[in-house]
Image (cartoon, rainbow, N blue to C red):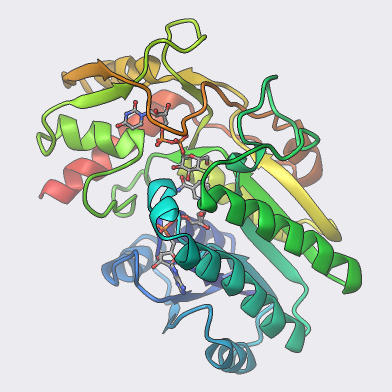
Length: 332
Ligand code: NAD
Ligand code: UFG
């Protein structure tokens, strides 16, 4: 049974990937410092899968900790989720973001090199494309201007990985996530935003649950059919399955893949679909655009389909239904 280390594996995406990997017969070891996750998620993963999971609490910037962890287990591959991800916070705390996201990756690469571990999957983001002007974006679309330190850390990390792959016999895949939303269909794991959510779907579900008064839609004057911004929302379980496929594939050196559905949905479409599938009324108002937001992005996913045989299967309605089930479970 292949042992796979998930850094940041108790977080939103890592926890869903843990479930899919265990389901496919992998043995999972989770490393997390619990800075943005809760220990109960470990029990939930065990409940869903019926399997035991090794958990190691620690920081990816701690080389000695990483070195000893990798020495203890015969790890064949690593999926690196551990990072800070709040765009706004990254503007306030750029050094923290460069330290955890960039220095953390370098520390991990050194420890992997010292154990001759070749296989690495990296959590990248479509934010690397900045504000593109033609759609869908392909992996050939060049990196664009991304105003936040967060976005820049993802560009830097991809560059570091590509350079590292040139001098050693690595097999590295960067997965460029579009907008992951939804939750596991069991309602046992999902996103756990701290404080007021920045992202659209958690804000919608918290508003529907009565925890927030109303949703603010940021801008209705974009050059899109209904004037609101367009994103490529992807179900977190589909996204998780892309990691399993990327681990199983042998692509060699370095490759970056778009992981989205290939379809764009406007903010108003998301709101309307949520109301339709849940039957819950969602109070909202239109306000000014949010600073730093791009009007539109959605991805071409043919390359991922070709390289790892993966395609998203779940649509917006299922994403929102599952997000709502998870939100309701948090109220109990
Ligand atoms: P998350 O915050 O839920 O999970 C990250 C996990 O890493 C958390 O459990 C946190 O405790 C842990 N962590 C943070 N710093 C650490 C450190 N120094 N050492 C050890 N553990 C640490 O975030 P997520 O949504 O699951 O995102 C996972 C990855 O995917 C991140 O790299 C993020 O940048 C990337 N990503 C996320 C999105 C998104 O919308 N969620 C989109 C694109 C890319
Ligand atoms: N939005 C609102 N109201 C809200 C929250 C969001 O109208 O309360 C709008 C935004 O303006 C945007 C869309 O909903 O048009 C999606 O916003 P999110 O904040 O959910 O997602 P973003 O596309 O801004 O960014 C997210 C992550 C980034 C990641 C990017 C691509 O926050 O970290 O997806 O993966 F890089």
